[in-house]
Amino acid sequence: MTTDTDPQRAEALRPWHEIVRDALKANDVRLITFVPDNVLRPLIEAVQADPFFTVFSTTREEEAVGIVSGAWMAGMRGIVLMQTSGFATLANVLASLAVPFQIPVMMMVSERGTLGEFNIGQALVARTMRPVLDCLAIEHHTLSRLDEVEFIVDRSIRQAVATQAPVTFILSPLLTGGKVFQK
Amino acid sequence: MSQTANTPLVRDQAKVMNRFDLISRMVKKLHRDEAVIGGIGYSNFDLWAAGRRPQNFYMLGSMGLAAPIALGVAIAQPERKTIALEGDGSILMQVGALATIAARKQKNLIVVILDNGAYQITGGQVAATGLGADIVAMARGAGIGQSMWAADESHFDELIDRALAEDGPWLIGCRIDTSKPVDTTERDPAQIRDRFMRGLGVKK
Ligand SMILES: Cc1ncc(C[n+]2csc(CCOP(=O)(O)OP(=O)(O)O)c2C)c(N)n1
Image (cartoon, rainbow over all chains, first blue to last red; front, side, top):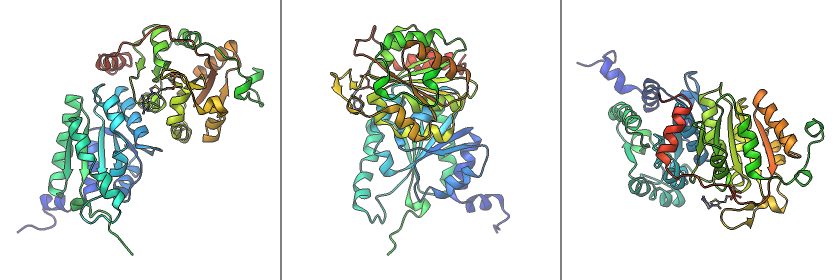
């Protein structure tokens, strides 16, 4: 019988944001820039609480991508946290900086617009995300199961660095609970 | 030093100078492998023309991101002074970056704005700067206290010396004319990035 002291089960009970934080740390991803989102809040708080990371918000997602690109070229790995609407502002910087200069920009997007969205603008803009990623041939994974988070994040960071290519992690409401309409 | 004292210049009082001359003056002062990010428009063309340095990064798009890229370099290598060379039209597009830089209090960062009042590379259309917007005042408002207009060439030299020697962040505004750039940057992004990383000692 499995109990809560069983290491595998204890791992399975850890929340997604702790698993992500530890995978970033294990891969020496120290710089975290973000434009806030409610679903990302526990991850932002977890990395802010850990002095290993340099964490700050920017005024636009593009700016955040510029900062982690500069940091990568100067020897520091970084990731940008944002929501779907923020990703929609990035096609130009990805096509003119990250992809052609071969910079492994890492991105984590909290997915709005699906599975119970209440804002039509979010639902529409969300539909642009995967087509943009696909047409720029950017690797992306949708994180929907807790037991897959560690493997996907860890392996994909290694791949991004090894192949000098950006990667995007999409946080599905299936994993995070998403944002629910409250009257 | 009179111009850097308590009564800073406004844009209208600054002399209109030449882009290539100013960039050449600046590059001659870089003796410690300082990093320079050349923004789009003609900024990176004259950086290229002022002499190849492996510590130069030339942008090919991503309008407005010279200062954010420079901020990233400065965070990763806090011992190295890093300079963003950006056009007025470009910084207007990403003006929030000034507030981010101020909030970070990034000591080793210098932003040099080349202000011709126009979007020159796309045909010289007037920009908000040509109609009264003052980037130096905007930067000060964003919280970059050490923001000033270069009154003339010798004042520019003086400001660059100070910015290289003393803690930043700094923003130096330069009014420039609409001379054509001296050369055209070679558009090979993978090579630009590879050289830059070697120039910064990240790749051997
Ligand atoms: C997002 C985006 N919008 C528009 C353009 C077209 N564009 C390229 S350079 C430029 C003007 C840049 O102006 P400035 O920074 O003042 O430099 P200058 O041309 O005066 O040297 C514009 C509008 C672009 N490359 N990217």
